[in-house]
Image 1 (spheres, rainbow, N blue to C red):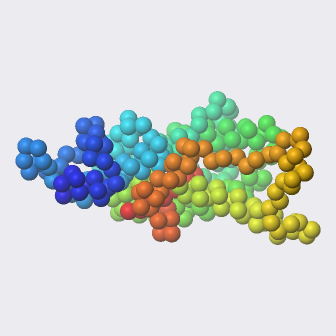
Image 2 (image 1 turned 45 degrees about the vertical axis):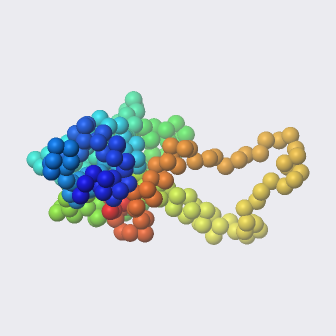
Image 3 (image 1 turned 90 degrees about the vertical axis):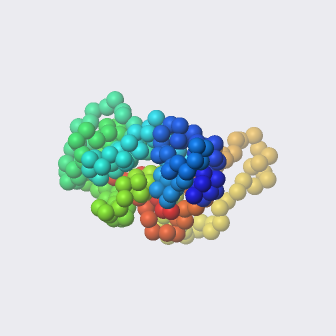
Length: 264
């Protein structure tokens, strides 16, 4: 196919594709003349991965180049490719806190992470925040959350087969980490509301209560729901642009199931 067809099928402008060619994120097409080249399905798949990394994960070009380099490095084991992609997409925070509570929790859960995993420090930061609020952070207290996370992770990683091509595996990690993670967060909120209704419904209104005219005219401030940030809205809006159907089975891998998946 010519670059114009590649642009149409990928949903990217020709100028953007040429930019990726100049940055060597996309391999050159097969020359057919001095000014034209022919592109195949591999170029289309590559562009879909680049779009996922750029539009969904919001990664800079330099980081995308690192992920793509790992995809192209056949000597790099699939497990290392998945970790590199997940770390790039999730960008776990490196808190300057004691990591021993996190290491203890992981050990007591029987979870073995890869050596040097950035998730240890990230988990330690969350545990420290809980401890600051005088919440229990022992394994028994956190078991319900750990079991739920393990169940989600098993389902997500189950969609990554050993014979899946490396680009598709990286794309599933990207989409799975971002979009399905957001889906998990929203389902959790919906479940909390549903459980609350089932437990505390007696005497409660079945419809959300809105401020009445009296409260609106009072001097007391009315709390309004937080708006979704433009960045978050843009990232979730990229789902429709990439033609991903969330009704399809195909979540990607995420070591703890932190966000989303699309397949082409």
